[in-house]
Length: 369
Image (cartoon, rainbow, N blue to C red; front, side):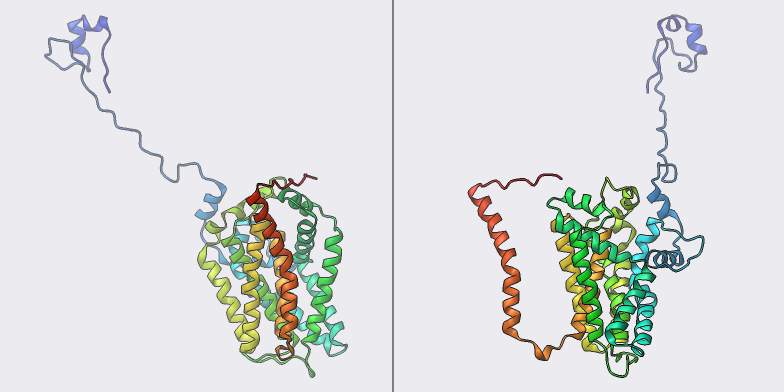
């Protein structure tokens, strides 16, 4: 950086000697070069920090994560210092399988075993399902109904999100939700054993142990879905700012918490059920989670809260059906015909899109409602 005196100061030798910018004894005007050190960079603590940065700077509090999961999944009373902070909620996904089995599953299984000693298996299943709805506040079922209405009635992403924001139930939620609860109660009743449930490490049988396992394994799908798929945030939703935190799932959740959720689900299955039943339940959860994630990506571009709740509900019923299935009675021809009939609409839809792109046919755009 060069600093020079003005013309008046340069004409005065006395001023040159007095001016610290001039070297002593010089008879000619010559500016001195002064090196000014650059301003130090702002440290990390001095930089502007977002709420997410401030949250990550806090000490890890796993106990609060556990209580946040309990508050989120159930209606049980929790400590006053616990709330629905989105950061702790995201990290608490790792504990969903454990709490799903140890809290919700234990509650539902105990109600079923008690009710089945007095009434028929179907009535016991209905009472157990009703008790679970009370304990969870019909939380995941609300997501199931919203997803059914949105995916069934919407043609575009914006239409789907708009329908899902509506708190009113439509025809899809009413009919499909009713069929879901009927299928759940019937599937649980089909698992009933004469004499009640049998509880033993690695060899439990009956409806009670399967209920306990299903409540945990179904919730194990949330962590990998949120981690491996983009979280869709609805900007027009009143809770959009809250769910914006979920967009940082890979940063908040982390791979180790996802692995913990998966590992805990595997341990629960093999600790409670026979190997064959445990493998069936885990297969349903593994395949169902991947299918749900890809389906959500194809329709919405990712996953969201209501979609996660719907996935949990469907996987729970899927576990009951898989464990209770009598493979010895399977009719290969009937299963093949069913697979063909279900696949034909999908195959035709893909072929039609390919044909229209190849011949340059423009598909009409869906109108916004």
